[in-house]
Image (cartoon, rainbow, N blue to C red; front, side, top):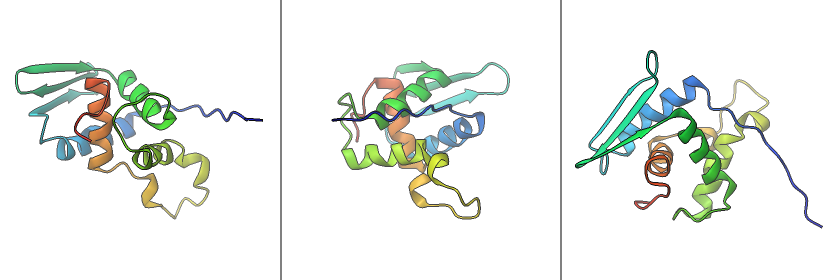
Length: 126
């Protein structure tokens, strides 16, 4: 018999800043420019050659969940999807505020996956 575990995830403003900052390092091989202003207008623009993606905080949050749930094929290896799941559920597992596991950090590579999924609906560049 299968069991279901539900987890509610809310992307914080601090996490959003970190993801976008990290993506500016990790996505620069395909995204020519990442512009955002989260303090006033909450706009996020990603430029790829001559194409502009306008994305929202909600799209980024949905991409994190889609990657972690592993229900839809988005061209990302399951071990990498597990890293996003670990990042998403870190508060559930991390009970020691002084310790920080590397599995719970959104680095530039993970931020790149999230940004690709938010802009393109999948992760074509891996």
